[in-house]
Amino acid sequence: MLNIRIEKTQNPKPIPGEDNPLKFGTIFTDHMFIMNYETGKGWHDPRIVEYQPIVLEPSAMVFHYGQEMFEGLKAYRTDEGNVLLFRPDKNAERAMNTNRRICIPEIPAEDFVQAVKELVAVDNAWIPTRPGTSLYIRPFIIATDPFLGVRPSDTYQFIVICSPVGAYYPEGLNPVKIWIEDDYVRAVKGGIGEAKTGGNYVASLAAQVKAHDEGYSQVLWLDGVERKYIEEVGAMNIFFKINGTVVTPKLNGSILPGVTRNSVIELCKHWGLPVEERKVSVDELVEAAKTGALEECWGSGTAAVISPVGHLRFEDNVMQIKDGGIGEVSQKLYDTITGIQLGKVKDEFGWTVQVK
Ligand code: COI
Image (cartoon, rainbow, N blue to C red; front, side, top):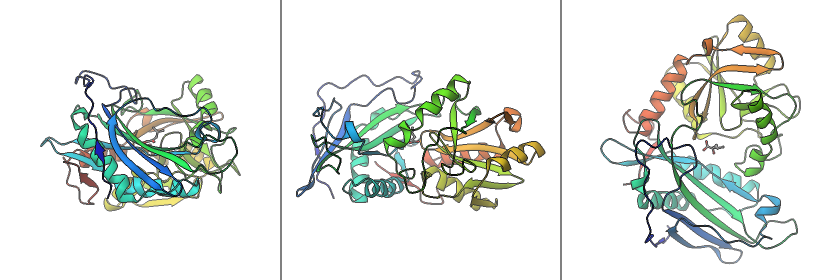
């Protein structure tokens, strides 16, 4: 249990009004959580202070070798005025897997969740309530040793910031267009693909720019070895409904184990839909699109929630899904997951955690 010192700001910022579009990730709340680490001393000095710039040496290791991790989760306000988090224990668990992979000292899961809960409680007035909005929470850890050699740092900062957000994609719940990338790759088994670390996202940028220039929202990655099997989209995991079965790539070491991905699988199974986690080749998709067996496609992620995909392109093959409309399973998943998150749908799985 952390003993968190709270120093509230003397200069609170105006909270955005309900008419603010809350473009994803552009507005930040009044406070942030910080805790330091030093070898020999461990994690220490947990505090909630005014949201402010951080001062680091230009030689800080994070700037040179990218030793950093991050997480993403959301807080919601229910109609009764309660504040709920969605599966924060899953984020804490994944965070520690990431830490192990990139040699960052672990933080006990209960301390991770406590830091998030206390910050959200302090800034709870910033949780927006318009449909489709929430408070996005971004915990991250950076390596801060002033040193230019390559090794794990001896000092770190664990920081949590919050941002009131609307939809991740400007399309909202309208289906997005996705480009299946056949040249660049995101990750390979044995690399860092299953860790939530900035390196995976910087690896995606060149392909994302190329896809944007072609009029596509995001890139769908193929495996880095055979360039044949579907992995994930830039900011979400991917699902298909093929001949009545919900299919998603099996976690193989290079795919991010999404919290929303896991929730989608559990919900679909609960509804009695057949679910397969397995290898899905791009050829299978092209064929399924041709025969009409590809009935639906959607992405899942904390930021994106459920994002229907209406159009996939692989080389010269253009796959139109549901005539570019929203599929029934995608809509039901979106309604159920956001319903549970907002306390409107019964939480049969015990996924929500009350903050206050
Ligand atoms: C999230 O969905 O929370 C993520 O971290 C994806 C991010 C690239 C926005």
